[in-house]
Structure formats: structure tokens, C-alpha cells
Amino acid sequence: MSKEFSRKDKFKYAFDTMMSRGPAGLIIWLGVLSAILILVFSLIIMATGTAPENEGFPTLLWMSLMRTMDPGTIGGDQGGPGFLMSMLLVTFSGIFIFSALIGILTTGLDAKLDSLRKGRSRVVENGHTVILGWSEQVFTIASELSIANENQKNPCLTIMANRDKVQMEEEIREKVPSMRNTRVVCRTGNPAEPRDLERMSLHTSKSIIILSPDNENPDPEVIKIMLAITSKSAERKKPVHMVALINSPDNLQAAEIVGRDQAEIILAGDLIARMAAQTCLQSGLSIVYQELLDYDGDEIYFQHEPLLTGKTFSEALSLYEHSSVIGLKTQDKCILLNPSMNRIISPGDSIIAISEDDDTIVLSGDNSKNIEIQKGSIFHTSSEDNAPRKIIMLGWNWRASIIIRELSNYLHPGSSLMLVADETLCHPEVPDNLENLSVKYESGNTTDRCILESLSIQQYDHIILLSYSDDLDVQTADSSTLITLLHIRDIADKLGRHFSLVSEMRDVRNRNLAEITGADDYIVSDQLLSLLLTQISENKDLSVIFRDLFDPEGSEIYLKPVEQYITTAEPVNFYTVVKSATELNEVAIGYRINSQRSNPKYQYGIVVNPGKSDLIQFCSEDSIIVLAED
Image (cartoon, rainbow, N blue to C red; front, side, top):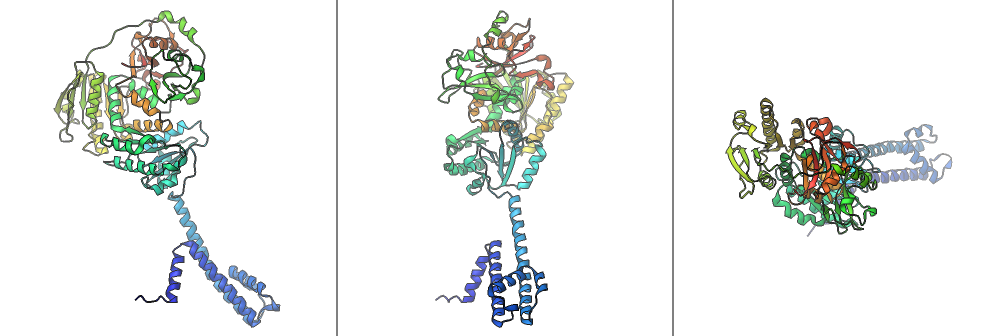
């Protein structure tokens, strides 16, 4: 039989329970104790008749309270010894009680300030962008969003990660010196914990970007965060718009099941592989992609224009002076890049255009007159470079097989690829049944200068450097790639030979160390993924567009000889180039001036979305940038 609890035990338990409530409990107890002391001493004075001039009980309560709060008040007291002694005891009690109260308030205030510094409070924002997780990609995304939000009113970027709030804010201030008019709010918490996510006000956010953690297997963590978000998505009046990076194709299906129609999943490795394949084959294409992906120039936007209803797609191409129309978004949300030139634009269709900003997509009127003036100079050539290419690939990771297959889709029959990789760092598995490409493999240390010189790289048209990221950590793998890159550049300089060189580096900081020396010296890194994440977070439909651009099926971006579109005998405006391209079922979006191909000040000669009325004098070595099926 249990022993009955004593009153003392019950009192101690009640006291402990009250104290466990923190400063609030202590303040309550001190208040109760002060009230008891004031009441007791007032009753004693009243009962003994020592009060001066027969003061009433309410007055005695007030006098005791004042002496409890202000010890100096006792100095003006007059009365008998009993009254003065009572007031002295009240004052001493007040000193202890209010000293304790001040200490408790100070401690509680410090704790609250410390909690705020730790980022535990709730975010109260509307239309904000949320980043969940932390990596080097944060700084690129923050910088790009600050540019994208320049024309917005009071934009806000909120970040949650398992890091100290103050440290996150200091790093952003250090690495992104100017956030323009965008406010950055950081919170400390676990993005995979639903309770922590509640503090980010996801139900009022514009978009959610989920970053991959910097570890060997980041995908499970990303999927857990997506699960935590979808579990809270019922609070939203409209579906969640989240963008997530998945590294391994094996985890793609699981991510799509979790995200359903609320998530845009970017398969990071596949995207990098496709971009590496495309950019190594076309000089200057990397600069075009950089222009479209960042917010520092022209980007892709959607615009509904009722005045285009009933016109053909080819007519719409010449109705914008400062924007380049590249496709249509139909009423049923279907994205069409480079559709049939005769397609009629329906009332619910929106155009897809490259422009400086969404508010610069403005109709400039019918410019057919400008085109007719130059019609006599238009002619087309059917010449095409069908020569096979020779490529050398140095290094290996699981993305290499995707790159090789993508190259096979773009190359002409008879092309060859020499693969050199260090078997102590990787386990190459060359894909079979390649239609246009033969592959030869040799084992070798790709950082060894002697081995690199023995490969006679001057015989190759393109060089691809891959990171050994399957078996090495990011920094070690990037260091190996950087050493190989420095050797290749030095060999090229001594040979006096220009190469199309694409290298892969995972860390943005290492990319900055490997300074780019030209449009054909391109470094594929996670910075591209950061740019793509930012673009899609602003408009989810861009996911379909970039997926199509990086896919060999459908229309892609090409740089083609200028003489396929116009004569080079006299200056022409870009309206003429656009009209000429439409006759080949292509969309002209820019050009490259070959004489500027080594000048970084002029984007290595690349001009995307030029003013269409400006006269340009092309030469035979120049190129037109087009959206075409092949």
C-alpha cells in the first residue's frame, strides 16, 4: 500500500512545478510572497496600534508597498518604535524580493534575446522564397534572387538550416555583399522536422528550394524534407511550389512519388552530363546557356498578349523589337518550343520569350516593312560540316556514360572518343551499342604530365575533364581535376593550339580558382544547378523548357554559319535574320561575332536577344544562334 503524501511533500511538488515554468513561475511566487509580507505587516501595525495618526488599513497597505519597492522611502518615516521596526523589516524584505525579481527579469530577457539570436522565432511573411538546407549554392541563389526581385516590393528570402543563425547571416553578408532590396531572414532548425517547418510559414510562401546537403548520400535527406513539406501542404490555399535536387537516378522515382504535382525535380548528374556534352561540341554555347540561366542579362519569360490572337507564330517573331519569341504555352499548359511557323495563336495561348525582364516584353508593331527592305539579300546554303569528330575524355564518374551517350546522339558517324582514366580511382564502364561513336579506353593517371603529353592531344577536336567524384570526396576530386586542367592549358599554350575544353568541378569555390580563359574553356559545376534552381523557383514552367533544351529530342540551341541565313556583302538588321531563319523552320535568338571570340568584355562575341532594328555587318566566320531541331 502506497504511503500517503504529506502536506510538505505536496507543497514542495507544487513549488517545483511552478519553478519549472521558468521566469514566469518565479515572478508569480515573488509577487505572492510580496503580497503576503505587505498584508502581514500591515495587519500587525493595525493590530498593535502603532500606526502614526491612526492611519487606515488601505493607507498602511500603500505605505508597506512603497517601502518594499523603494528602500529610501523609510528615511522620511515618523512614528513609534514598533511602527519604525515594522517598516524596516518590510524594507529589508523588499530589498531581497525585488533584487531577485530584477535578476529574474534580466535572466529572462537575456534568454529571450539569445533565443532570437538562435533563430527560433516564427517567420511572418507573404510571397517569400524559402531555402531549406545549406551549401555553397546558397550564395549563388541569394545573389540571383536579389537581381530577380529588384522590381518587386519588399521581397524576402528566408533560409532554414541546422546552423547558427548569426553565422548564416554573416556568411551571406560576406559572400553576397549586395542583396539590393531583398531582405534575408535566417532560422535555425531541422528542415526535415515538421514542427521546425511550421516556423517558416510555408503556406504563404511563393516557392521552396530544397538544397542537397554536403555528404556522400544526400538524396534521402532531400526526400525526407519533401515528405515533411507535403505533410503540411494542406494548410495552403494553393499547391506548394517546391524545387529539389536529386543526384542519383535511382532515387528519382521515389522523389517524384513524394513530390507529386507539387515538386519540380532536377536530376543533377543527368543535367550536368547533358550540358557537358552539348557545350563541348559547340563553341560559344556555354555562354548562351549562362546568359539564359542567370539574371544578369536576358532570361526566359511567359507573356499573354491578346493582340497576337489569330496571328501565326512566324508573324509573332517580328512583332517584338527587344524580345525574342521562342515558343508558346497553350491554354492547356502545354509548352511548345519552336512550334510550326504556321501555327495560329489561340486566345488562351501565351508566348515564351527571351527578354531583359518580364516588363520589357512589349509589342513594337508590325515590322514587315523593315524585313522587305532587306529581302533581296537573303539566301540559304545547304552546306553542313559532316566530318566526324575526335574527342578525348580524361577522368571518370557515373555521369560519364550519360555524356558518352549524349555525344553519340549529336555526332556524325565515324566519330571517336578516347577515354583515359585512373583505375585506382574509378571503375569505368563504357556503354555499348553507340550509333555514331566508337570508344577506346586506356588506363592512366590523368594528373601525370608525362602521360598527358604522350596522348598527343593536338589530334583531338574536343577535350572533356571529369571529376573522380564517385570514389573521392568533393575537394580531393576537384583538386585532381584542377591539376589536369592546368597541365592541359600549359600543353595547349606550348603547342599553340586552341581546344574546345569542358571541365567538371563540383564546388563553386574551386571553379573560381580555375579561371575561365575563353568561351570554349568552360567549367561545369554546381553553380549551374544553383542558377537553374533559382529560375525554376521563380517559374515552374521553366523546368519543362530547360529539360527540352538539354534533350537531344526536339529543338535545341545551335550556333550555325551566318551564310546559311544571309549574305555578308552589306549590313542587315536582325529582323532579316529572323525572317530568314523562319524559312528554315528555325528561331533566331542571337549571333556570335568571331572577331570577338577571345574578348571577355564582349561576352566572347556572343549576343543574345539583340535589338532587331540595329544594323550588323557580318563576316563569313560569324554565327547565328538559333533554336532548331538539328
